[in-house]
Amino acid sequence: MVTNPPVEDTYAGQHGNLAVEIQITEGPQWFVNRLVIEGATAEDEAYLRSVLRSTEGQPFSAANVGADRDTVLDYYYNNGYPGAEFESRQDPAAAPNRVNLRYVITPGQRLYVRGILVRGLETTNPALVASRISLMPGDPLSQSQIAQSQQKLYDLGIFAKVQTALQNPDGKEEEKYVLFHLDEARRYSFNFGFGAEVARIGGGTTSLNYPAGRAGFSPRVSLGISRINFMGLGHTVSLQTLASTLEQRALANYIAPQFKGHENLALTFSGLFDDSRDVRTFEAQRLEGSVQLAQKVTRANTFQYRYTFRHVTQSNLKISRQAVGLLNQPVRVGLIGGTFIQDRRDDPVNSRRGIFNTVDLGYAWRGFGSETTFSRLLFRNANYYPIGREIVLARSLQFGYIQRWAGLPLIPLAERFYSGGASTNRAFPDNQAGPRDPLTGFPIGGSALFFHSTELRFPLIGDSIGGVLFHDMGNVYSDITSIRFRFRQQNLQDFDYMVHSVGFGIRVRTPVGPIRLDLSFSPNAPRFFGFNGTLDQLLKVPANQPLCSAEPSPLCTTQKINAFQFHFSLGQTF
Image (tube, rainbow, N blue to C red; front, side):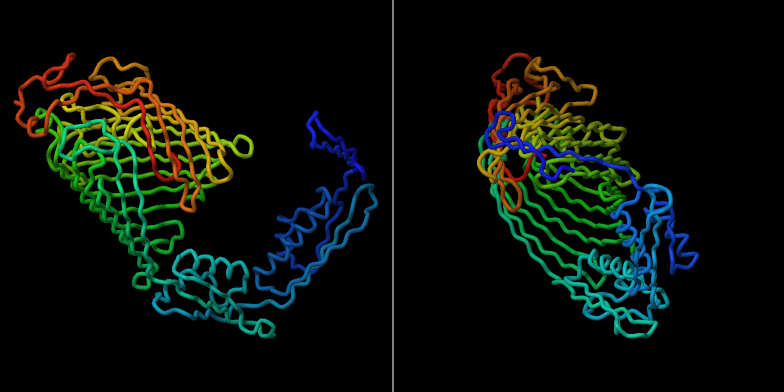
């Protein structure tokens, strides 16, 4: 290597740029001619030779010798030799560019576990702690086993501190006690939050006005309480509530992490009450219970297996009388399902690189307690590509499909896909994409969906304010066979086409994630028929009266999704 490499100022004609040229001369490569290991038993030596880097014929380097030192000492430390020592020597061999290596190992006294002492438990079941400690009396004293046991206890999430120590570490006795001193974490925790949604979410809950929504403001407040280490079992009981003008929700969870001692399994029981009006077509009251087993296969991949039973009632339906008889009825659904999650993002809150995939499958059947039989698939994919140091190109794809098999003549209104809005296609207000009632113009959901979004994320002002250019495309479709990629709407009752939107967004970085404002323009926003009257007048329309057709009538008026939309919320779009 050149000691004083040449330096070129004003590189490529830009003032202040420097170019440094470094020249390297490799010289001859040295190899290990012979490796001698002293101080190890024949069994230990056979194992060590299988994991060492500096074996006969391998390139010689000080880095490889250092790595071998760590490997040898780790092996002895983890087999009961805490005082093991390692020394290396190298001499030139008779052949050119060859070296003879000699590793001298002094194992020292071997120590064993006399017993395990646990201190600091107040409410935790001692059996729970014992099942996470892998050391047993009579085992060689292993530093790695002590560290792994310490980590397993931390992973329970119920200890604020886990400390370990040896009995009289400098003493000469062959057997020693291992002490685990545990500090239990606070058992109760509370959370409180408030926020708001600003978008085209307005309109009366009992009015037929504004089927496509109008500018509205929805404040929301959340309150939750958790009790960890329930009954000393390491389980968690929680209750989370949410109240807003669009939704009231209470969710109770019982979580058993590391189910049956398996580190990668978690069992969850859930109960949900939800009263929502986020789909403006109806008000839905949902009672739901579920049990789920989550299995973490690798660091990035997780499977979830669940059974769900729910009962949904609907009220204040804003649809034509011809559809009320089929759609306005309580629905009982029993469903088994599973989800695969692959998360390789660098940051789940504000991703800059990586991939995120989910596949959700469900099957509702009478044998599971359901009134109707159908299957459901929902696939999501997102990729993130850094461009330079500051710019990120992000894209997202969503595809969903519901297939009815038996039972009720139609997919229940509350079980259909409702989408569009801040997290899918910003050409729509929330849950306004897809098919609409032919008389009132309110959304009635669909059996298929397809959305694709692309975002270019970049810094705007300093490190706290960023900008986004985006393009969204997609829709909710009446059926999978109706998915079309055409640009234009054929008539006022055609919703099976691809709606596009382009726009600009602002992201403000906060400790809980980015606050975002998106402004969208759609060149092909849907038009549709809307009822010209009140809800009372709609109920008086004879069930056999023809609905809107190609031309407006005294009952029908032409309406549309506003080409300009705005969305204000928390978190990235995807």
